[in-house]
Length: 477
Image (cartoon, rainbow, N blue to C red; front, side, top):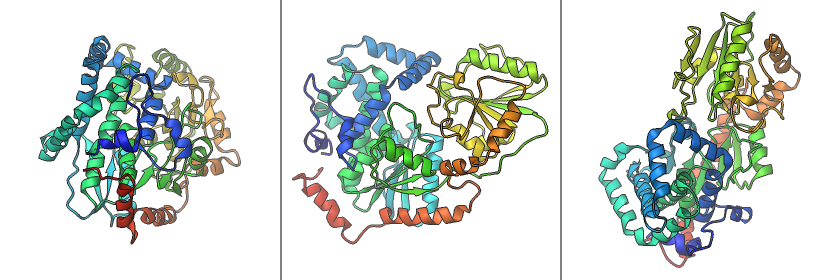
């Protein structure tokens, strides 16, 4: 069974008192392994920033609070591992479709709208390569194929439980569940690759989510290639940047490629595709008619209220557009804030481009949306106190991509004009968005050439896949 990879191929120690995985293995590796996948998820999900997000989710969602409370009071030896195994079953049952017609050459996995759009871009670059689109949805559970995959996981329960006991006594519910889900996805996709020799590559839109690194590890173990496409800017000043051990990586521009190469292990062949959507020169108005405030995780409601009041004091009739975080679990409760101003508009889930076009300037905290805004031709004012993240997590201020505002001032718009019209700013912008005001067709052609090198089977690739399995002395079956 594919699960044997956990114990034999990856040499993961499951005994009491030992760490079951070590992300530092990435320092000496050029390909994804199960140990690296689990280590990446562990490092991400136990970081202070993720812990703050988990606390925010629990604060805003009663169901998550209840599950977390039940888990924390459960017995570590039996009930907590059962909780985690049930979560693994849910991940497998909801993930699909994985049925193959035989013409597909690659499989992708994506979870959120920006990841879906990223996979759309890859598919558009190589439309002649058949691509299976795997997502997660409760509707998948009605497929007979999902029943069989879930049943196969049940058969492996005895082997999985020692691993679950280790993480159950090491971490709280949310990190433990995410780590366990990475194993679940690895097993699910190992089965897919093992049973489908026609698949030649995996396409992922994240280098840290459990489903993405689980698929990447399964692909490399089964002799397939991995294509990574970033769905958001790389946080250059984050405490941990996950490795990019894919065969090929499509990134927005040179700045992101350098961040990966300088600050983490990166073995991928790089190609630049630019930001999604259109790019426009910076647009300026005679006067400020509308101000956007685009929120992210960890929004500080008190700062937001003070900011609105400051804008109102200076521009009483200006329209203020507040764009909510796109993840519903992180929505801010504005009812509790008592916002009744008719000129304050709340948006949630509307197309980002439409919200940007409605604004003369946009204020945001530590959010990759700043890159979208300047690409669309609107000035961004970065307000670090708007959320709880560390100052300039993304590195946009230090590279002089965006303007950092201490607070709202009457001359803010003039300051933005001076900053974004500085000689050299457009060069910085193009390093982040290689498609900024250039011919996108040329970029796409170059990216397609790189992609095809990794998506089209080489004459000896069948032999390579067989050799990858033979090297372990056994197959997955």
